[in-house]
Image 1 (cartoon, rainbow, N blue to C red):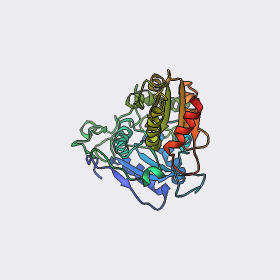
Image 2: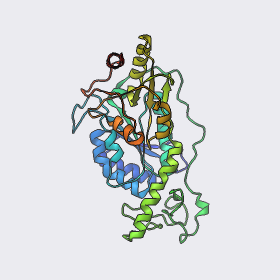
Image 3: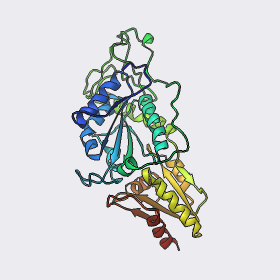
Image 4: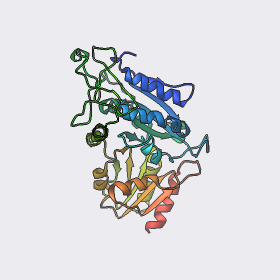
Length: 340
């Protein structure tokens, strides 16, 4: 695909998940915006490719439709057990975005953002959905609008005519290096899964290794500028019910049930999960009397992340991990019993 094309390359089927992630990496290096989709087990097989994209600074998007595990687990059921895994998948440290949309409209917008942000920062992006989300039917109030133009973050080939000057991994204050495309100019473009010099040649020089890790890590400071705060329903409520991903609808309905029962409740939905919007989270949650976190795993993975990044400890975790989605009444009954 030509790098000028606005439409991304979507890998729908491949021999296996390893081939799928390799295909989108190759397409991204060639200039196509590319993504693939899988479930948790398939994402496990993609972890090595994710790490390659991290060190080679290759923009890719992976959609993980979560289902209960480990292994095949409940193959046709739903869950939210992969959050901590996708945050740390791939050995060592490298920046990434993680999003968890709560509706089809939000998923459409998030996927477009993901393709753009992956290229802007030259990082992998992971979108977390789940089996319930994928199997549900929705009626939308607005249509899907495709932008007339798609901005690209690739250097102008006309500016890269000297193969001796171009540095694919140039150390910059922002951590973002100029991304040229192979065979589009005289510039020699080299990428590698090994640690490398600025021009892409392999190296094991200690100082260069540290400089490259620091360079990649600096991206996260600017990445936070593109992270959106959580959506809030009834922001001044004393009881905040927190959800992420597909629990959004159930949480909001439960909050309206609580308010009808004279409990001052509000809903907070996180879609942009990593880098974590800690300041925005504290602004929204810091003054609440009670915090309840709703998620479909057995260990409270988002609750751990919230405490890690903000120091906030919930009044209670409302967890469900039997493979079935939340019903609003389950959330309502737990909270109403606790806060009365």
